Image 1 (cartoon, rainbow, N blue to C red):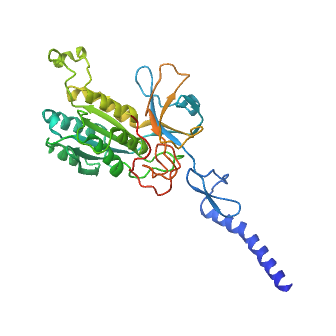
Image 2: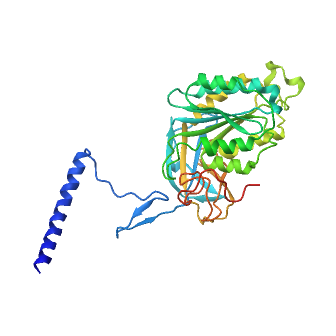
Image 3: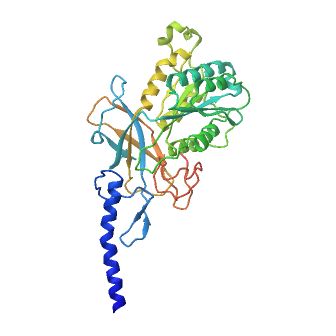
Length: 381
């Protein structure tokens, strides 16, 4: 009996000490206001009342996008209630919303150095250098340079030094085949997935961008276009493409003073470049001269620093590996256009490794520790 009394007394003493300790800890950390317990983030472990932990898995799809008005000017002041999101044509409930402005940029500059663009290599060099000098902010943004012919090769790692980037770009030479999709895949899996994305309910810490300059004609890749697009979507990479082709301009329309009269006849390669851009929320450009890109580069920089992010949990989500079309609308603002990726790939099943971790831009809830950069599920035709 005495032993029982001692144990009870000790327990009561400890219970009385706990609030005091908590109060001191709060004072030590500043005048923090008490906060209600927050819901666990997707795929994170939450404590239960029994002291045990359980894993919460939520299939979230996050979408990064910009909004333009009728004059093609950015609209940065909209709120969550202004948007509606549709998955396979069905309205979805927006779970998370944020405005993301002025984030550091992580840019992958991918240059086609195959034989097919030999006559346009100077254009590629000038265009890529012009973009970097227009957009890159020293000590905040970083870029790397990858060339690709028979295979992709990093010739300059991440840096904010535009001079170093320019020197490597101007030293490129053309030769070999064309492995566009392998280059996109490697850039996303090995470079643009750093730093890792936070969980799906938290905004990204950087903006991940790819500038692809090519004629769009792949003839050597081991990966498919669908696999390249899927991985770009999962790693939240927005692809902007610049065509090196001039086949859409007839000989009578090459006068630089008559650019407004040129007729656009996209080649098969140009259509591929357009698809890569639109599937990831970017844009495709078909210039004749580098000067044609000056305003476009400025617009890209402004877009990347003024974007919205929403996340939703698809209703009746099925692990079928299918491609799902998504659409974001601003119903109460006629004439506004939303620039976002067209869709995402669902996971095939719980057992498959996913291309992204819990922060990928496809549905969340992948197995923890899954390697990044591994395609999974069926590909879009």
